Image (cartoon, rainbow, N blue to C red):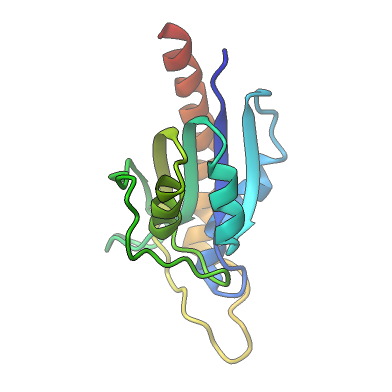
Length: 165
């Protein structure tokens, strides 16, 4: 297979459930994944993710907290609408992570990637408190292992799809 898969954990460990992507990547690293899969914790480093996305990937899986109105701990797999190449007016903040802005910037710079999926988890809270809101809520913590299995299934499915092509 000449295809490659990037699994990118996104989130701020100081904002409670926003650390979901970071925690899933931590657990994924304890599993044996195929050589064509790169697993990386990008945290809030939007520029690092953008540069990584400048490489050619057949599949990019972004893992992040994702508020969609469900019960905390609910997992979602979505295929976001990818931006066109103009990227006009997009700002990327080096101290936060906005995956949509990162995808726009990569396209504006001429980057190309195949499919992009987002594995998201409904957070209970991502609000900072005065002492820092460390750690995942119980519901989101309980969703981490299921998210790991889901990512492994997506990777296996990508392998099958790419080899059938």
